Length: 284
Image (cartoon, rainbow, N blue to C red; front, side, top):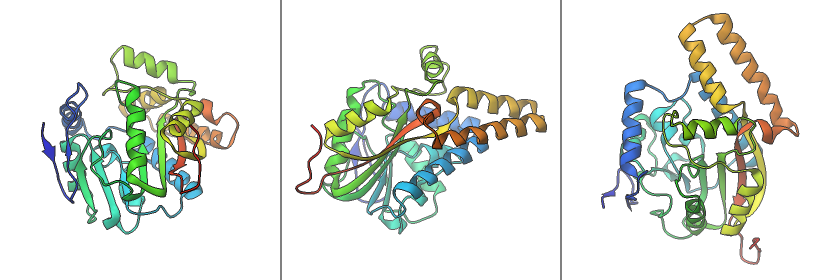
């Protein structure tokens, strides 16, 4: 079992399951061959959605801060690491894949606190050492749904009392989720995609782990698989009018964020949760 440390003081042992570091290293290599994992317009849309969430819920995130995967930073046009805390020296990035962590380190110029290869089920940080954890669709890639609970308890452990977690997971209430699950069964997705969760399921998981749920919402409003497929089609055909029409349609869909239909249209369900202060009581 190999221990990996890329920069900073934290170390961790790779988890030797079928979707361990080796699998995600292979995914990273395939991204090398094929370029960014996400269309630039879709990437910008996703970035703006997350920035809007931060603006509403957490304008000044506490430090030290941790981002629980580096997929966007190593493979995408939608990096968020440098935006989540200031100064960057108090911000850590981690990924199960040493290769993804290494690529992120090469592409992010700021002197971050550390880039770490680690497993979210066994975080290489001391108890009560972090003020903020940002987990953007990291914990919905497990084969076993029970691993979500394990990871949430680990995040609770490393947060200090009053520290906060901003988490997003694939949204089971999205009208396009059956298509997403069909793509998983047919093995046509570019990498392993795990379980999806409804807003109520996410709340239960957080409260069972010991968190106090402060906020919930949904973000990135379009049928995810269809949006990616349409973006690829538009890029292949290269008809400007088709690309513009596609982009206008996606922008219009984002207005659903402020409606009662947001959980039916959002690709991700989001929550802001806190580790209770002494005297506060979390739900069992």
